[in-house]
Length: 288
Image (cartoon, rainbow, N blue to C red; front, side, top):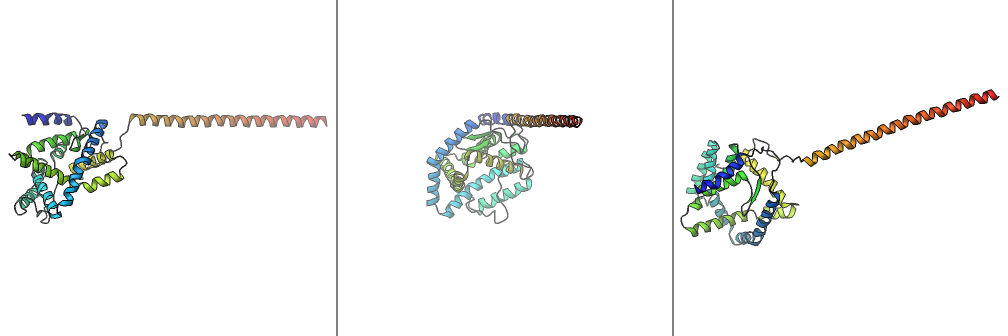
């Protein structure tokens, strides 16, 4: 009951949100999100990044790959469940076979035999499943420690952590905590190159991270069946500016009309001058 109480409020919020797959980025909590993003970055620079860098330096590549494969294999349990919930039965059979092969002859997933056997790795989460079921994205949110999410994926994250996380089922606390820390360090080590590139080239790392995450989450949810590129948001201020531009064009036309009227007056003045000259010429002829 306690676990359900954690998930239900988020599901109720997302059920009321109907963001289209290619709708604009919905970030109403941006000021708070930026503060959480800054906190996560500070924690990453102070702890996670140095630990992950040291882990990569001291860990032989085969061992690092084996650790990554091990946690990827554990994640395949959640992937198979979400395959079935989304009605992807053929993919579920492939992912279940991959899980079986890697868990047995792959020694608990340390060696990835599934990929060379034609059983590719897929990424399915309960947040994506909710999207397939028609639940809206909800607002974008940056979670402490977990990073970019939206309300829908946050509900999925809680559900998977509570129900589909094999590490959480380990009865003893020390092995459970140790494996959790190792999984976080392994994942951060895999992202070292990407984070360094982001810091070097992004003018606004927060916005770049947000837009990339939203596009990727939508792409994984819809598997290329829908256009998921976020459209630019149209604000009321933009509409007001457009109306002002139209008024400026009308003002320019009015000015041109006034100039045209002046030109017509000038032509009339020229005609009057010609008439006066003609009268003078007639008088001169009479004098003669």
